[in-house]
Structure formats: structure tokens, C-alpha cells
Length: 392
Image 1 (spheres, rainbow, N blue to C red):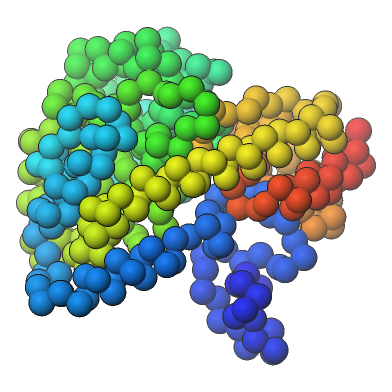
Image 2 (image 1 turned 120 degrees about the vertical axis):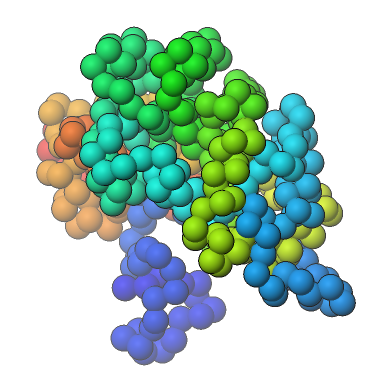
């Protein structure tokens, strides 16, 4: 079944065409969705930016784009990131992608061979696991705790494996919501230099902070030559734009620019970049992020309150930002056991095993608080309570 806003629902449901990646029945509350709510996508802002850009005489954005990405767009993006990150960002450090996932795919294509080991957090982003599997990589899981990646776990594995890459989500991690501390980031930077591996930091949630400001992103250290920072407009503007960026040092950027894919097809998304350049230049992205932070902070509080009242027996901690709450189920209950019962109460979640490279995390679930308004979050947690209490 296909979820779509009520204004677009045809009378004959069987004739509907799927227009979004995930299908959700109308009466179902899927607390596992990691998508922004359709009503929060800034259609009017993007519509006006597109109108203004298309009204200009310069339409070079319809041609094959520059391999690194449109220079004017990268300059505008650099100014935005400089303000958001709080440190200087150069346009030359940026390479435009069609999203963070495409950026990660390119990293694997350029820097790995099938069978290579790659260090990852356990748990980690479930679709990153799929990308690594597509490239035939050998996954070496590293422990995380409430402060993020456990450096001792990395040090132990460095004595056994020579990996070219460590992939991590350092800020408001998906799925755990945890943030790597400044001290651990510094130790990690030193280890990457000592052992010669790349830190591929997926930093798509960094600007969505609802409490204390997180430590500087790894993008701040791009000039070191050992950092590849992945960014995306999917969480801060709209995922359908399929637009993102890589921030890295000049040698790494040159490797992306000279890639055969770009030599053939040119830079990624020059048309979309031209429109979002207008959004950036008018301060629209800062306004949109401020709006999202205000709304998501309230939704996080709403889900946290509902969990506290309805399911106090669950183990979890509320994140300082991002999208997700990582929950441990009680009394040995597994997500696989709970899922069909939860679905009978018309509520969904993502099972922890989806985020494990080892088939672990069986008693964990991931909940997302951004897709639904407070009333639906309350109802969703109440339904989850009914499902859980059927087992305990």
C-alpha cells in the first residue's frame, strides 16, 4: 500500500501508484520511519526558488555539470556550512553528490576492493550495511557505548586487521542517537594518522541539535587528508532533491572528480543545485533548519513523555538531536517476537537486528520521533505498550 497525503488519494485505492519509498497504511503508525513528515517539506520555498532560477537567462544548469559540482553552488554551500559549523569552509573542499548514500557508494568504489575489511560501529545505519555488502566488504564491528565509539575496541582490532576505512556516524548516531565525545574524536584522529586509515564520517544529523551543541564535526579536520565527511540535504531540507556533498582534502577530492562516472556524465544534479543555490543565498536553509529544530525538539519531548508514562520498563536515553531513540526491550523479549503483535495493534518499529552486522541487537528496536505529530506519537507509544504488555 502507498502512503500519500489525503488531497491526492484517488477513489479506487487499487489504482494508486507508489510515489514514495515506504508504503504505510492510512490507519497504521510506523514509528520506525526515518523520513521527514511530508507537511514539513518546504514546498513553497523550493517552488519560489525554482521559479526565480528558471526566470533567468542563464540556463547552463541544463548542460552537463562540472565534475566537482557547480562552482557557484559550492561557494554558497561553503558559506552556509561555515556559519552552521563555526569554522572556515572552502568551496574547493566540497564535492557535490546525489546524497550521502551515493557519496558512501563512491567512497567504497574508489578506496576498497571486494574482500577488504572495513571498520564499522555496532550497531550502525542499516542501509550502509547494504552498500558495504554490495561492494563485497568484510565488516569488522566495533563496540559503542553512551559516549559513542569505544576507542579501545578500535585499538584492539587495529592489531588484527588493516582496514582502509572506518565508517561511523559521530553525531546523533543512527540508530542509537549517541554522540561521540570531543576527547574520543581527538583520539580517533590520532589513530587514523598513525595507522593510515580513512575516517568516513556520516554527518547528516550534525545540524539538528535540540540541546547542547555537539563537538565539531569531522569535517573540521578535512585538510588532514584522512577525513571524508558526508553531508546531505535530505534531513535538513527535502530527501527528494537527491542532493548532498562530500567534504575532504584536495587529494581525496581530486580522486572523486576524476572518477570515470563523472568523466562520462558530468557533475551530479546541476539542475537541482542551481535551485538550491537560490535557497542558500536567500537564507532559506537556515530558516528551515531553525523551524525543524523547534518542531523536532517538541516531538522528541512528546515521545519521551509517552515512553515514560506508558513503558517505564524500557531502557533508553533521549538523544540530543537527530531522529532516533534506541530502545531495549524488557525481560528477554526480542523484536522479532514483538513485531507481529505490534503490527496487529497497527504500530511499527525497526528491529535492532537490521542495524547489526552480526545478527545481534535482537532485543533492541529503533523509534523515530520526527515523522508524526505529538498526538500520533502518543497513540503510537500507547499501541506499543499494548503489544509489549502482552508478553510481560
